[in-house]
Length: 260
Image (tube, rainbow, N blue to C red; front, side, top):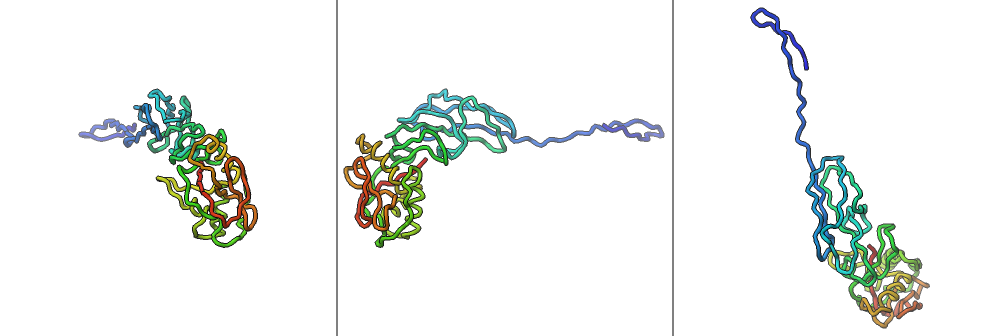
C-alpha cells in the first residue's frame, strides 16, 4: 500500500494505491494406481489433486486386486519389478511436478508364470541389483552347439547365480554372430521382453530342481547348455538333476532365462 499526494482543484488530497500480486493458476497432479498384470479385483482410486511438494498417502488394496498365482506385496513407481521405488500402503510420497502412477508389485511363487509368460524358478527373497526372480522362457529353443564353429576360450567361467547375463555377453562378444546357444538366447524376444540370456551352471541347476523335478516348465529328460565354460572345448550342461561337462561342438537343448 502506498500513499501519494495529488492536487485536485487546487486542494491536496491523499490517494491510496493498493498493490496486488497476481498468482498464475497453479498446476495440480494426480496419483493413480495400475494393476500391472492383475487378473481380478480393482485398483484403488485417489480423487485428490496435489500441488508440487504435497505429500500423498499410499493407499491400501481395498478392491481386492489379484494376479493369478501371485500375492500382492506393495506399489512401485515402475511397472518392472525391482526397477523403481517400492511404496507400501500407509507410506507417504512427495508429489513432484508430474502425475504419479503406482504399479502393483507382486510376489511370484516358484513354478508360476512370470511377467514374460515363462516359469519362475528362483527367488532370492529380496530385490537387489535390480532383480529378485529368475524366469525361464516359456519353451525350449532349437537344439544347437555351444561354440560358433571354432573352439576358443571366452572367459565365461562364472558359475554363480546372477552371472548368466555377463557370461552370455562374453560369449557373444568373443564368438560373434552365428547359430549357437548363447547367440540364440541373446536374440530371443518373447512379447515385449528381449532381455534373455543363457543361464549359468548354478542358475540352470535351480531350473532343474524347481521345474524339471516337479514336472513343470516343459524341461525334458535331455541335456541343456549352460553359459559356464570349462575349457576351450568344453562347457557345463544340465541333465536331469545334475551338471556335467560336454564338448562345445555337440548340439544340445537350449532354454533361455531372464531376471526381474
